[in-house]
Length: 203
Image (cartoon, rainbow, N blue to C red; front, side):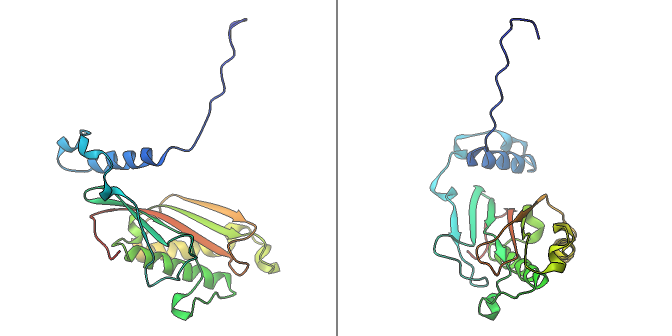
């Protein structure tokens, strides 16, 4: 740096706006079409009422608190939609929303709930583009708490689930250790994003 020259200003980083994410996805989907003329951005890309998010609760998963919905779908092209799932936990809708004490059992139920949410919008685990795992660090069980988060068995269950339901698809993920989840019984939570070509589903 030359003496006397002004100091460079620090960079400022922030989360990209939602519109930027949707634009990037739209460009990706266009690039995978057979007609190159669809690459051009036109006035038809402007937001319209048909692109508004639609949130709902599938009957096959636990009914959530009034503050949120389990699933949200947002059309990003006439033939594609972006799907976000609320965090799914080991709460069993087929058993009175019971939450088992076992960490392993909670993980299994959480993955079944992910599958049910995706099916409700005509998607499968093969359509997942990102996953986030939340794991309670201190469970009160000495054997469990003595293991690193990656050694508690959930990863093997996730790999087996994705092999069975998605042919071994391994989307990017994030693993987060937390002090607690929404209720003290919960030990594990998983949330997912997906993209589906083809507007449909049961929502």
